[in-house]
Image: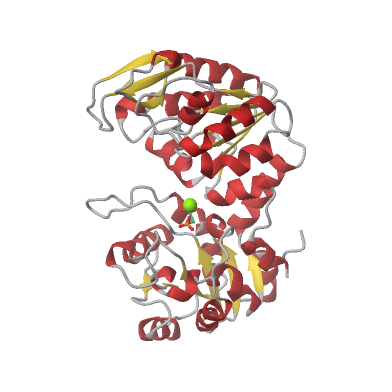
Length: 399
Ligand code: 3PG
Ligand code: MG
């Protein structure tokens, strides 16, 4: 890879230099309290930040959080993240209450060597996500003014052609951070020549989100196990009734076509947990997939499916998993995700967990993170990497 790395930058010496780090601190927040429910993405960027602090850089961190609409929106403030980041670094993080305004300018100007600042949410500015090159560029100019060098460690956002990801590296000497390097190194093993059998587990709610990756993976994988909300569109394509389960009607034909072309590689659930409502305390039962009642909706895969998926996973030498098998946030519908995750940890295989949601599921279910080979911080990013797409954030580092 023709990309310069953090080590190259450190070798040049960064003491007293301002280093702008794009991180992905887009962590899940509790809807009621606003508390950070999973700090995995904050911890993932510590190796890069720690090395810069150690080397005496003035570290200016920027990130997005959620999807605010180009203007300040308090529920998406990075303030709480600054607090948590400071705890993890063991030193206060100076928080700027705007992104490129007066607060940001004075916070950056006041940084001493080895200190860390965090700017407010990049997406409070329309220029960050704008499709207009000039608008993005103008915002990138303002951001770039805060750094003498740029480090991209926001793997979860490398698939976004956003100002902080794509346009800032064109304006500053740029390198890949430790997290971005590690992610790319691991994922490239999956697109290279993975040891076989190579088994992929896909879940999550929408087929439409996963269509491109399914297309790209079908010729490559030995087995493709499908659970989560998206399995119902596939079951429908097999001619089954799915009650009031999630269904993408306009994708049924596509799923039928994928099943026909899949050479039997696609494995679908044989049983599912159906409930009266989408609620933690809803009455529920396990049924065969050909017996889903018309008034009930499927919220998890069933135990026989878990056993079948586990058997396939136990044979694998390489496993990639993206997307929960059911509504794991509700205890009644968590068994499928837990069962599949446990089967992955037991396999004698190189295992990669892709995605914000699946990574959060691993931790929320109390599974041992170290029993997976790699837990990616990128959901969309890891899928687009596996699709073989050019990722704007990586391409910008190559130039
Ligand atoms: C993610 O959570 O997938 C990344 O942080 C990117 O966020 P986005 O999908 O809102 O661009
Ligand atoms: Mg996303």
